[in-house]
Length: 161
Image (tube, rainbow, N blue to C red; front, top):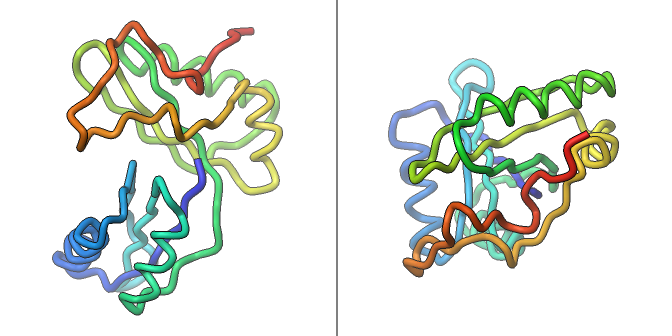
């Protein structure tokens, strides 16, 4: 996944206002993550379906958008622990350190996770994880469409070693 981040004042309403404005301007965010970014600041990672629309809207809002960065989305069936453990074991065997990882059960027997490694390790991590990206496989939840939990998207993890 490609993503950008913005740094905001660490106020309870800052991230809410930014997300509401982005949504209101038609930016389709397929994921985001917020965490501290030093004293009095918070970082909001933004995973947009259309990076150009995100860049334009963020600029119009007066926000400074980071350069494009790369991470990984992991989705599957069941609970996240077995799949995430497998991913972490693969990365460990390749001596790739994980910068950040969040995983959550999504209901209906599915889970999702976001994983970040340092920029120099992205290509090797993609190789080790057999990762591919195809935005056309993402489900647009706003369209009320979905796919059965048994129909994993083509970019889901495959080829266990």
